[in-house]
Length: 199
Image (cartoon, rainbow, N blue to C red; front, top):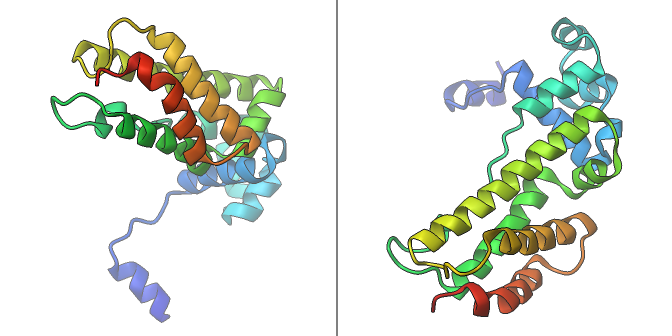
């Protein structure tokens, strides 16, 4: 047994399942090359999972992608994590939150994935795009409404408009690599904070 093998057995780290390796590979290939490049052969080469193993689980590429996309978790940072319990959200915390949203997209989704999501008419990719948009946008709107109900943001603003501005700006910057995430967050905060902030 090699030293590396003995370290992995004693480290307590859980070995990813075959499905987890396939899911990670699908997302990694999509991030690097777009969804069009996520073939079974590409997943075999990237994941190390045997082609026969993949075909035992899936009849074809479409079935593999549907399963992988259904099992890729979509969870964005929560606005509530950026303010102290019972305290209003600060301008600086709001700016940090916008920066983190951008980092989340770039680290967990990737710019090529967004390009593929926007450019494709493939029904399974369109379905995942709609699921992602709904999860991303709905979570943001829910966070804004929660902040309004507990008094950390002004109740008079429309959460949908704020959500469209922030989420749209973050996705645009991430997709087209326009400017720095920090500068985008600073400028978005400068525009929105006088309207939404309570302090």
